[in-house]
Structures are given as structure tokens and as C-alpha cells.
Length: 312
Image (cartoon, rainbow, N blue to C red; front, side, top):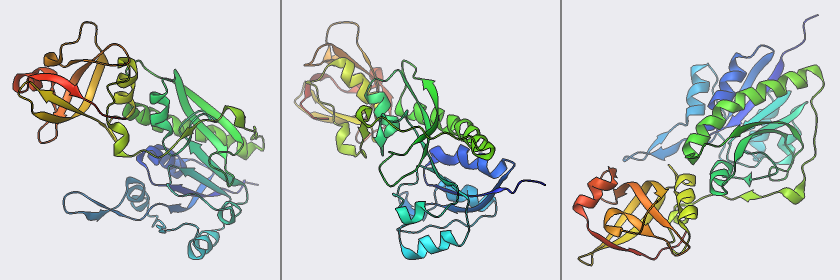
């Protein structure tokens, strides 16, 4: 007798979850009974309501997603219950699931978290790995509970961070790693051998939600720290700095790429001294009212005299 397909609901809103959703849509033994994502958001100059890529993929597969403003609302919970799911798969959904919802699927709820738990629980684990100078990151498949990424671990898949890794490049690599981890987890569940490994709470670190304010470069820090911050916040929320020209004018820039400079400070060449030690060489910048450009292009139009104090 053929085994019944697992009735599965995917909950996600971020692009990082797209490869995992594609796997679920194509994997034998999985019956997709629903997709839950965030409401459409204003975007672009006209601030028109725009669907996320998860919604677009679901619609392309003939699935009309549920988009509750509050997934914990009675209406949303009852709607999801009516789908009679066996399993939830969650990645970058953006809302905390209440216990009333976690109790709905017969087999439980899996979260694909973009870090090696218990490190970097929370909203911004991809950025946190780069900011912390980690040598590796990965995707953890976790049995969800009502805590913040505190559930038992089913399995983890690791990847080594490259020397120039940014939050953007790591995001894409973990997105591609997620379906590998998910497929292995689903096969273990199907075989009845999926483990539940308790997390070591004493080793936990947290990655809170980021804002644009965190990207203000603080020149009292070391060049090594600042270079890592530039990578860890690229492409979003990005790093900004204020520089002063020889004419006494202040210029606000966005820093796209930087490196720890090999030589003495020379602000005119964007080799900027750091109070914590070393020189940060800005490689690619963007004035607040201009286009993205190389340091050579920027230096031709701006003779920089010094940095202006700022805080991260």
C-alpha cells in the first residue's frame, strides 16, 4: 500500500525561502496544501502594493496564499486548521507563530534558520555571522516551539565563510543550502528516524532586527572591525559615513566596499585612519545625491581632509 503524502504548509516571506519552497513543490511524497506569507507591501517610487517573491511563486503553481496581517488571529488559525496539515515548514516568515498554531500540524513544525543554532537566534542571523567574524555558518532545521529559535535541532548543514563574504553573498549561499537540509530532514521524518537534539542555551547568541541607524561608521573602532561591518551590512541596511573636504564641506556617503589598507593614512585617497588601529581603504562609495563609483572617481571630485565622528 502506497504511503500517504505529507500534507504540508509553507510559511515564509523572504527571498531566502524560495529554493526551499521550490523543493516542496517538486518533491515526491509532499502535498502542498497551503502557503502563508506576509501582506503585500508598498514599494517603489509610487509606493504601490507589491507581492513578495514567495507569493508570486505560489500563484504560479496555482496556490493562492493566505496573507494575514496577524497570523495569530482566530480567523487565520482556523483557516490553516481547515487545511488539515501534517507539517509546517517555516523560513523567514516574519511573524512569531503562537502555540495554538504550532499545535495544528500532526507531525510538528520545522523552521529553517539561517545560522548554526544556538548561535545567532533571532531576526538577522545572516548579518550576525559576518559581523561576528565567524569562520562558518549554515542552515539549521529545528522543531519549532513557542520560544525564539529555541526548539530542538533536527539537523544542520554547514558552509565555510569566504574571506570577502558579505551578508548578501552569504544570504544567497544559505538560500541554496536550505533545500538540501530540508530534503534530508523530510526523508528522516518519513522514515520515522528524525532526531530531536536539545539546544545548549548557555551557548546561545542573539541577532536582533537591524535598522539603518546601525550602519553609521564609528571611526573610533579598528579598521578590521569596520571592514567587517561594511561586509556584514551589505547590501542592506548598508553603511554610511560623513567626510569633510579640504574646503570645509561635509559629504555624506554610502560605503559599498572597503578593505583594511596596507599603508599609512591618506584621506585624500580614501585611506582613512581608525582610532582603534589601522587604516580603512574605501574601494567603492556612493554620495547621498549621486551614483555608485570607485574611490578614484570619487577622489577626483572630492579632496577629503578628514573623517567626521559617527557611531555604529
